[in-house]
Image (tube, rainbow, N blue to C red; front, side):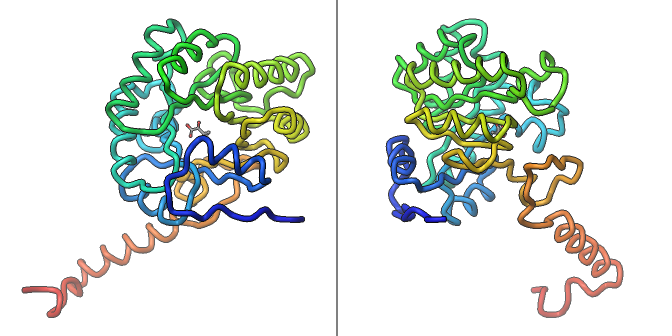
Length: 274
Ligand code: KIV
């Protein structure tokens, strides 16, 4: 396997640089973040793209879906992340109900995100159904990342979190939507939980970068939810998830040791007081 030369430059990652990475064959790294401290660590570790995902609704607020999170809450998370990030491109999800029904509302939601968080761009879920909203947001000069396949904001329509686009009809619509998003001017696309073969085909047909989550290795980059890859969440174990740490164990052990030290009057000791 030949690995393309890595872009390690410290200057800010732009939408244009992501397209160059695709052209060079360098895979794009992307991870979610929702707060200042974690965003700082992730950025300093060299992540290309940080997504302020509406998965904040699940992992930060404890909701069972992404639907309840509001625009104000997404802006709060976006602002916190932006204070920390120097290099990564920062994408903020437009939450459910702020862009689907009405393109005027869509552009004002996107403008609020850009003005109040200073993020680099926004992400929307869906294809042809939200075409008008995407066109309007782009016409305001705001870069848009698309998201197709398993789109969690439509979970009530799907009724299940299983793999999408296994059937011919849905796969054909996904391919059409992917081309449409590129033609409209989206700078990148997320494909979630679809067959690897289909994702590879889409990535090879499009000029814009295609970032996968549960979409195999034939795409131009990968994204995961930070709490899942760090092993903070334990009740979510899809096949595509690789855990890079077991922070649940680390945190539990540290907290238990702290409790123990307090109880046995070991903390604070002589050196830890004034
Ligand atoms: O909200 C999110 O974290 C996402 C990723 C799963 C791509 O949209």
